Image (cartoon, rainbow, N blue to C red):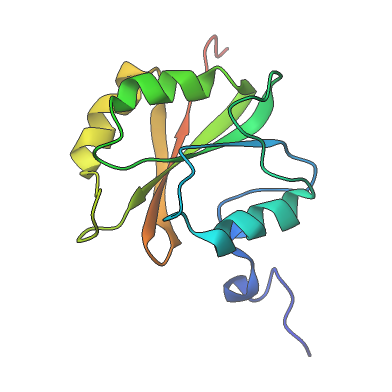
Length: 143
């Protein structure tokens, strides 16, 4: 019997492990030459479309935000990322892993996210040199 994606999660792509799905539109912010190209390619392959940049003028399902400690104000960047999202969209905040130049302390993310109106729902190793924090806007008006 052969393993399927459901039977063998280690065979799933990076993008699938992060929850990306076919048909999603994803805006990428903060791209630089230190970003993880295999992760970027995985997102494009799973979603079936190229990553969109900051010039995209519609709404998307998700934002990949590559962020380094010296990139500026994280709250402002997260608020900007929210401007691209449809209701129920999410932000994957990607930061260099501990020990790498530009590492962002988890406590800094923990302070910035609520200030931007976001909640952290998951943290994971997104790529060999990048940590990922999944951020979503809190659901309002629950009944």
